Structure formats: C-alpha cells, structure tokens
Amino acid sequence: MYGFISGITDTDNISYCPKCGEVISRYRADGTADCSSCGYHFGVVECEDSEEAADEI
Image 1 (spheres, rainbow, N blue to C red):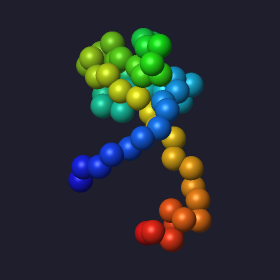
Image 2: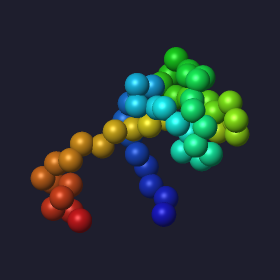
Image 3: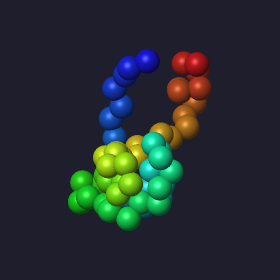
C-alpha cells in the first residue's frame, strides 16, 4: 500500500532504527535520523486520534 503522509517529524520520538533495531545516535537538523548500522535514513510522524479518523475506518 502506498500513500502520502504529511507532518512534522521530531527526533525526540526516535530511539531505534525501524529496519534493524540499532540504537540511534545520529540525528539531522530536519528532524530525521540516520542508522549507523544499516544506513537507513528515516523520520517519525505522529498521528493524533480523532473522531473523524475513527469514523473513516
């Protein structure tokens, strides 16, 4: 499934690599992180629960 997610990523929510599980120690100024083990570059976007979202399911 492919889609578009929009939001702001924050390094406060990044502790481990979602690909290999390594502890993250390299963060970028844009709110993303790099895994020093596998090289994966990623960000985390939070989703808020809302009544509208629950109605769409």
